Image (cartoon, rainbow, N blue to C red; front, side, top):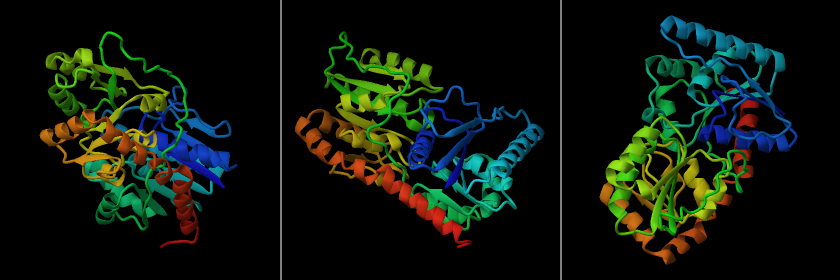
Length: 374
């Protein structure tokens, strides 16, 4: 089996990690895998299986106006089509909306299976009229579209012309592979903290770390032995750092950036928290559970409720409810026995989202699409 993945980049992100997990798994099975990205590949965050072919197109330049956007996307589509004609993969998989749209156009008239995949909940992350229109129109050319949740699948049925929509969760690797940068999670000896509350994600609005800092500030005095660690990088770093100063918790919050040994941090922490305004799935929440880390998560529209089992491996609380999430964190931060109880069940995520189980679901879609239209 020969599979092409088309993706914007292999930066540190959830969709990128999922792509690497699947690609490495199938490459290990002896399949021929190629990953093509709009960005160059010299600064890839993740490590690929040695047998994977990697192509970076350097076609990620920003468009200054509509005419430039039309030309840039025409050039990207033309380049994709040339690669598809050259390599003739059995299956081409688009990763995220814009790549799905361009890939669907590039493959028109070519005899191969083209599958798109959504990695956010579409209405929670609108793309503007042009891409929304393209998604609605071009998804008809895809053999299938894979969504992460039932809610996202229903939205796609109502708002696009996709012919076949299937729901497949993200796979979670355990243990997670390690790569650079290796950042040791050493305790800050000057903080006096013995317990770690961990959050992971891009430092961006959708992850709700500003909300998390407000919540932690309200708990910090009652729990002087706890520190908050936020792993990830992004455009809001300066704003978040400034917020810790304003709240008076700068000495209790660490933001080490993106790390390549995230499994070590999961294993070292005592409690995980997710405060996202929206999620497509919530990879880091599932990863944390796989490492036996009890969790508290907001119940945003899609994602966490498909992962976290309330009262079994953590606590699920209403979104934007400061008292509720504060109470849930307080309950677990003050109760080591309850944390241990949840941790014993949390590790079941290793089996629930195992790569072999998820890969089989993808392979079933490949087989289904090979039999023709639904």
